[in-house]
Image (cartoon, rainbow, N blue to C red):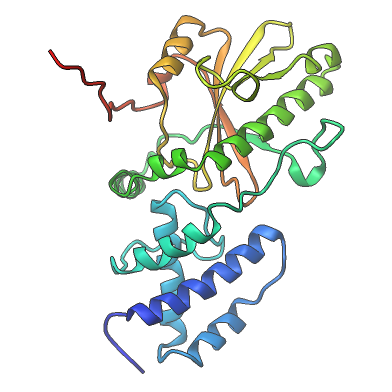
Length: 277
């Protein structure tokens, strides 16, 4: 069997195979990992274990880039840098194909489109796990995963549309149909600049100003927040909230953060407005 670094051709083949399985997972279709492994071994001179580990390497690259990965291939971070171009090439091909998890014609979400709302991730108590998370987040910054998600306007809009349906359904479930009908997609109807994306309501009728941040990857993928959004969060803390949507391409999940944001988030300035003196 071959040893040493994987060639560009081998990387391209194993990445293509991985994305076939990933697309099947996202679509809810069955696939057999062993059959994919066997097919690859017929084309490249690598062992079963080597191919399995390479699949885990691809999961690690996707985690760094802020994308979802195959659930059965836990990210293994010790990989060749040359794997990045092969993965990024495949990602560029699918960037325009964002699934529409939004509400149907009746305004409601069906069972296949429901957003799973959970608790925010806790700070890990285990020092080894904390160090691993720190390394991955650091790599995500290096490869600018936040900027990549920000550029994908279709993804951001699809995430907002999903949360729009969630807000209407939440109010309908507590018999506030009157409020559900008044939920507005502000960023779509009025444009960006309000400091939030959706104007909804709390159960008592108080305004609920929802800012949505969406990525395909895990819950700790870095994201951007604007100065205006921070200002509204600070000036209207009882009304404003951030809904963080993650794993959008797979089974969309989310958690909610309320001001003050610096309790939950490490805010780091990355851009400055420049004027001539």
